[in-house]
Length: 149
Image (cartoon, rainbow, N blue to C red; front, side):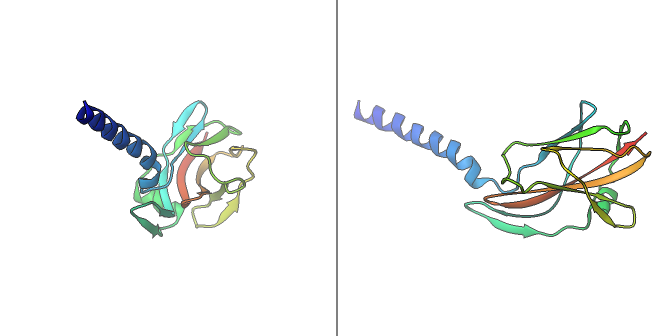
């Protein structure tokens, strides 16, 4: 009887530890879900620093335009003035979310966020964006591309 209770308690402790430890062992920052016109846009991890219980590291990548070119990312087509929404599974630190729009010659322009969303340009063209956020464990940027038709 005592062995059974001990075994059940040990299994419960291990399961509880795995549940709690999932966040502690997470090796990379949360990835945002980016949506426009009711569809998800594929995002690519950019530069980040992240600390977990077993690992801490900073990774510096090429710029947003280079990331899109490297992955041969296909832009998602959207309508002019479409609202683009960002959602993180783990809530970022207050005031830490930001966004930039990049030109083909690697010039950036800050995008004005309203809550967790912003508006795509009305002018036709292909636009590369990077979004960034920070958490207790670190910070990260993610990149995506859209084509306004």
